[in-house]
Image 1: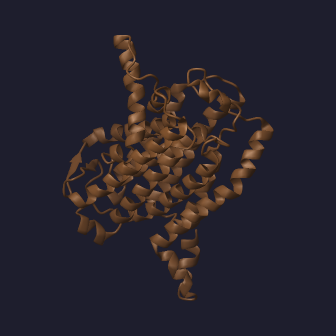
Image 2 (image 1 turned 180 degrees about the vertical axis):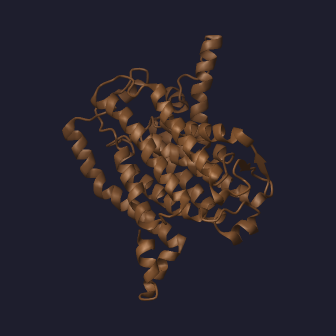
Image 3 (image 1 turned 45 degrees about the vertical axis):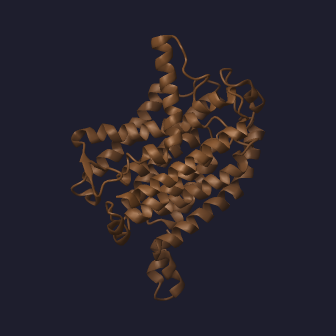
Length: 361
C-alpha cells in the first residue's frame, strides 16, 4: 500500500524513494510484524482466556503435556494478523507472487480456523473431518498450479522445477507438475501442523525457514545476483522477500508468547497457514527440491509419522517410541526445552546448507 501511494510521490519528497527498495520494505515488514504481534498478542490471549478457549491435551501424548491443558489456543489469529498487515502495507499488491501468497495464507488460515473452532469450541474430538481438510489443501494447491501454468512470469518453465547444485538445470514434469504442487503445499502444511507439538518448536523453525527463503527470494528476483549465482531469474520474485520479512517478524513475536511454558498455542489456524505459505514459497521460486532441505525438520517429523503407521500396520511393530519425532526424543528422556533447541539447531544448519547450494552451482 505504501509503495503504491507514497513511492509515486518521490519527486515531491525524496524520502519516499526508500519504498522502491525491497530491502527497506522487507525490513519494515519484519519490524511491523513484530510490533503487531506485541500489540495484539496480549489482548487476544486475555480474550481467549476469558472465553475459556483452551487446548484439550490428548491422552496419547507424553504425560508431561497434561499440565498444558487449558492453555489458550487459536493463536494463529495473532500470526495471521502479524503477517498480513505488514504485507498489505509494504508489499506491491499488484505482484502475482504476493497475491498468491496472501490468498494461500488466508485460505489455509480459514481451514485451520474451522478445524480449531470445531475442536476447541464445539468440542468435536477430531475437529474438521480429515477429508474436508484435505480437500481445502488440495484446492489451494490446484489454484496455485493453475495460476503458474498460465502466468507470463513463468514463460517456458511453467511445469519445470530447478535442481540444486546444477547450473540452470530444470526438469519438466509436464502435466504431473499440477499434482506435484498439490503434494508440496499439502505435505508442508500438514508437516508444520505435526511439528506443532512442543512449546516454540514449530514457530521457531518457521522463522528459520523464512529467513532462508527471504535470501533466496531476493537473489532470485535480482537479475545480477541470479546471473552471478547461476540460478533461475524470476522477474518480480524479489517481492517475496517482503512477505518473508513479515513471516520472520511474526515468528519472533509469537515465539515471545509461545516459548516454554507457552502462554498460547498457534493451533491449526496458524500451523496450516504457515505450512501452506512455506510450501507455496518453494513452488513460486521453483525451488521445490530445496524445500526438502530448508524444511528438513518438518519433513522428518512427517516422515516419522508415515513410517510409524506403515511399520505398525505391516509388521505390528513401532519404529519410534512415539511419533511425531519430537515425542520420541521426549520419551527417550530429553527435556522439552532441549528437544526444541536441538531441533532449532538442526533447522539452522539445514537453512545454511540450503543457502550454500547457490554457490556450489
